[in-house]
Image (tube, rainbow over all chains, first blue to last red; front, side):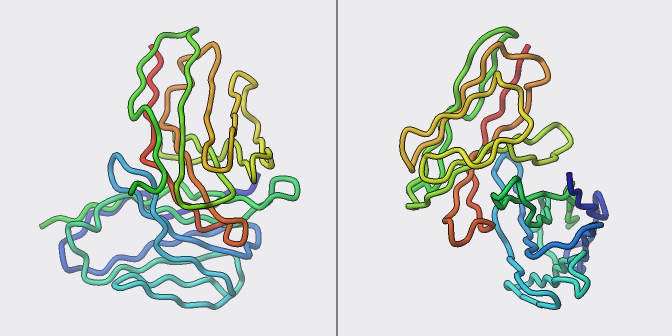
Length: 113
Length: 113
């Protein structure tokens, strides 16, 4: 099936630094999403992108839908301790005629005080 | 006021046993999902139900059987548990008109010994 390559796999940053992570695919996606998973919890939707080239912000988070529709990135500005967690990209794929999400492998973010 | 809830949170059992995980959502959504997250945090869809009808059934052993008694509930029954079934299982829900904006439950950590 389709796979998403997410990088980096993990990041260690100082509080206050900006962070950038990205996701690429060999296939075109019509929708890109970014989720965050806190330890012991389920993923929570951060940002949804529906159009190529779209740039969307949610507080300190900014995500873009690549113009080729094969990639997306997520930036976090001025990181804080509660940004710690796993960030997943996800793209729309199909199972038969049903739309479904395919998730990237995640980026584990650690914010050091 | 929990949106998507799962029970139990933790499940430890022996190989060969049969167990069930329950999921309920009070968001009024009409689509529900089961995902499996392995030890490397990779999230993969297993099943999806829309209005109690199975619409996605990925390559999952037939020891796994989902049941949706109504739109607000989706249970997962697992027969003859194997060591490789150990994982975190997440339930999620969404509206048909926004299938990618999924709300996840807190997860059930299944450990098979």
